[in-house]
Length: 266
Length: 313
Ligand SMILES: Nc1ncnc2c1ncn2[C@@H]1O[C@H](COP(=O)(O)OP(=O)(O)OP(=O)(O)O)[C@@H](O)[C@H]1O
Ligand SMILES: [Mg+2]
Image (tube, rainbow over the protein chains, first blue to last red):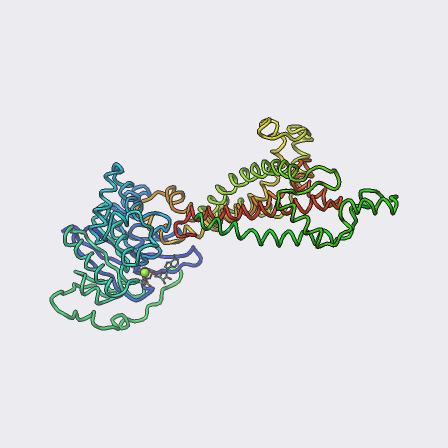
């Protein structure tokens, strides 16, 4: 099967010509339609940078090289306009921090409606109906009221549900979730994971699922990529039927690999 | 909200009381005798004594203060020692002049400063940004009498666009009023613009680095939309703060600019009062300015709650 997302030899460097740090080095992997691929690795190993480089959301000081093929087209060579059409539409993202990822001055309804208005020019009544539907789908009670609420009136778990509703709005083929549950407490975390599993099952949406929680990987993912210091050090299927996948049970799974310091100027 | 406003208005009472005591004391403790100033140096002891009695200046300070406040509470600001005219109507009329100048100056300042600050933030580090920042720095550093004099020289004297003329109210003759006010307004506007521009730039820089901006970008929003639909309102509070402060400050009358462009505003009125030791004028004027300033601050607080739903009073 043709992969939905195919990343080939991705390099990411930060800084200007004189002082350049490589934070992602020669990463290749793919995500097939309907598949959940996990990326794990310790803090600072480059998971977020990798995920942000797919939608080209890194700042101007980032230099991204390689190929990011989505449905066969290289996103790194697409125009900014084409990228804007894709963001929130073909590919959407869920971020780690539900507390700060929503605009504090816009109502929940408005924020979920934004991608709908941006990508499908729907009439207002239709947009609202769809937003309420999305709120229900992500398990937010009293959707009609929450629609007019502001983010500060919701709990962290509720906000993350709102973020998921935003990501789902345009029915993307791929959702990149960057540590979507790290900031939440354990019970809420389980609920959010269940919600995402449901979405992937019912809609055949692919997920690129970033986490540093190996238990979450074992529960969620079909395949997992282990990153260490900007490189992929392990790439394997997750065997859902084996209760304890060998590599993932080792809390020190990364420390087996030799220290690879990020190199300067190259 | 109404409760908040009432509470704030009640809070004004002690503030204004404090200010009234302060103004009164400072004025009366400063050397210089209004009676001597009025009568000239060759006044006889007798005439000085009579006038002093007439004005009530021979009474103890506490009594004088009490009388002043007593009348003030009835809306009576008294009459000018110097001209004998009632003070309140004069203050109101002068305030009208200052208000016109301040509004025009603020509009000019903000219309320039906010877009320039935004561009500076979006293109931070670019030539445009550096130019904008240098201009703002100049605007802050160059005193406004220098700017005013320069504008007067160039536009009034050499080019002759704005000949010297008497002040008229905007509502009486808009064209003439604008002609009279434009140079002083630009002079004041430059200083305002500098402060607002710097604030706009730094707040936008901060807002644009926030997580929710990244979220907006991930939704496919255009840079234009991000700037106006997301960053603008989120950056508004510090900008409104500094703009409101400048506005309130200028409503107190800008002595230098009014003097330079001979505009009969509140600043000039109070300054004349000080020169002539015209106690009731200065006392009344300063109290009025203080009241306006506190009211502007209240208005700014109300604007906060309109901008940000998290701010509830
Ligand atoms: N804008 C940037 N400029 C310079 N360096 C950056 C930038 N963003 C990230 N980095 C660096 O890239 C490296 C990888 O960061 P990244 O955020 O991808 O880590 P992560 O794996 O997501 O970690 P975490 O689990 O803590 O989220 C870090 O060393 C970080 O300091
Ligand atoms: Mg991260």
